[in-house]
Structure formats: structure tokens, C-alpha cells
Amino acid sequence: MVKILSKTCLRRQEQPGTAMLLTLLLVGAIGVILFSVSRLTIDEVRASREIRESVLSYYAAEAGLEKGLLEYRQNHDIIKDNITSNLSNGAKSTASVDYRKKEVSGQLDKDSKAEITIINPGSETLTFRFQNQSTAADAKSYVEYQRLDQVGSIWLTTKREMLDVVGFMETTAVINTLNTSKKIVLRAFGGAVDYNITTTNPHLGGGDSGVDSGISTINSTGAAGKTSRKLQAKIDRNQNQLIGIFDFTIFSQEELK
Image (tube, rainbow, N blue to C red; front, top):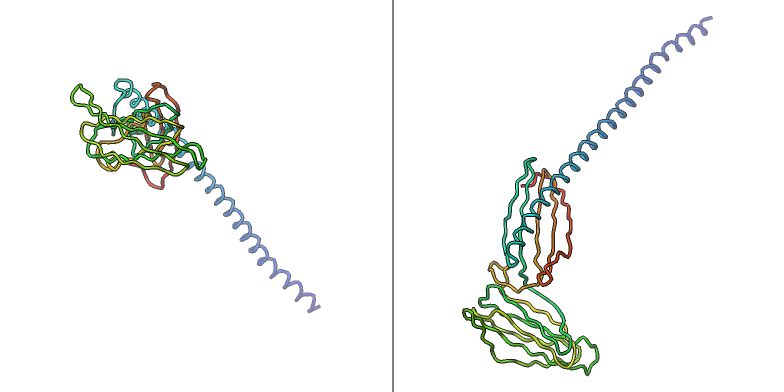
């Protein structure tokens, strides 16, 4: 009889411990569920905010791009930075229009010519690199280059210089321009050649000089909150045609200013 009572007491002592364990497990499970729901809600809010900011920054970049296109329409030779736009929703944009480059490349077919325009000429040193399109070791072409100087409305031609381009090796010519040098004329004889031109005093170096790339580029960056959208438009200056619009997205950990 004593043994039976002892077993009954033990069972009664085990029941409160089991109930407490089940309670703790239930509370823990509820906590995990609540934390997951809370985390999901935060992620949804963050994603919603990023989508909204991305849309607003895109519209701002679009507004800046339209301003840049208007500036180009009024003046095809425009070079301008800091074209700003402020939207009523708080988004803003900054745009620029430019057609200068530090480096340009192209090709000259046999018996053809190309005119390279220098913008705001100063004391640039232009380095020309020529290479035959033919990879044959005995390929040979001749490139003639000539400076055109402008004094008022009068164009003055300088002495024509000839350069032999032999084989597939690169041939280099250096031209020092003056304040009046506005164009360099290239002519190819004997065969087709590829050319590359670089300047030691481009606008990227702090000045306002450069080589006409033949393409006007409009960059517009719109910002809203932590998101920035960049639109870039390219216009063929010879054909006066829009040749492409490119879209870029930037996300930041901090507010974009």
C-alpha cells in the first residue's frame, strides 16, 4: 500500500513540470512566429519604399533628360553642366550636355578623308596612332595630315605632312596645336587604316578643350531618398539623331544629396 501511494505522488509531481515545459515551448514557438511576421513586415515596408524612391528618382532623371534635350535643340554645340530640376514630390535631378572627349577613334578607307575638330584650342598636344587594317606584314599605306588654322573668318592651311604606315605595326605622329588650330584633316592613300587620337589637355583634366567626338552625350541623374537613377542619351551630331537612351540604378545606405 505504501508503494502504491509513493508512485501516485510521483506522477502528481511530474505533471506540473510537464505543463511548464509545454508552456515554454508554446511561448517560444509563438515568439518565433511573431518575430518572423515582424521581420517580413519590415522587409515589405523597405521594399515598398525602395520601389517608390526608384520611381520618383526615375521621373526626376527623365525631367533632367528633357531639359538637356531642350538645351541641345536650341544649340547643337552646347557644353553645359549642372542643369538642375526640382520636382514637387521632393525628388531632384542634375544633368549635363557635352560632346568633347579626351580620346576618339575611327577608320579611314582608301582615298578617303576625315576632319577632326578641336574645341576651344589651346596648347594641346595631339597624338595620332595609325594602323593598317590589313594584317599582312607587307601592307603599306600613307596618311596625310594637315592643320587648319582659323583667324577670324579666314581659314589658313598649313603644310601637309605625310606618314608611312607599314605592316600591322602602330605608327605615331604628334601634332602641337596653336590657339587658332580648329581642325586636323586626315587623308589615307594606298589602303585603309584605323586611327586613334588622344590629347594631353582635355576638358577632363580641368580645362575646356577637347576633341569633337561626333556624339553629344546627355547625362541626367535623379535622386529620391536613398535611390538614384541615371539616364544617358546619345545624339549623333552629324545626323542629328537620337541613337540610344541608357538606364542605370544606384542604391545607397544613406540619403543621397
